[in-house]
Length: 175
Image (tube, rainbow, N blue to C red):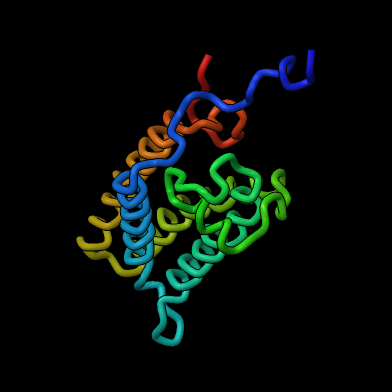
């Protein structure tokens, strides 16, 4: 019996490529989430510039569009394909398959999403203390409502993912 016949395929049934509408929807949700976080902290200024907000979006852009694509996506089933975010195709444009450090990527992803969530909550709360306004309070409320929406969308993406049983970031496992 060959080695292939002995070991089961690690990939579950799922989408070979995600529908374009799903990809666009997930990215629009992320953009809204990050924009609300940016706006909530934007009154925290230094020299007239919203430095906390600018640092936040710069960090997210670098991590989500470059660093994590190299370290995670280059090892993913969806490398070069349209995954739930479309980032598998982005990774293939930027990096060779397997060129990143997957374990490092998983750790960096956890840190990145923690920063994406915690910094706007703390930053907007701090901005509210310094300069209360109903609009900042509303932005904090919207951000807090978007947080579970982002998690639920991620979970829905995982439910259709072929790599859900081997991906450490999967929110859904089958069988």
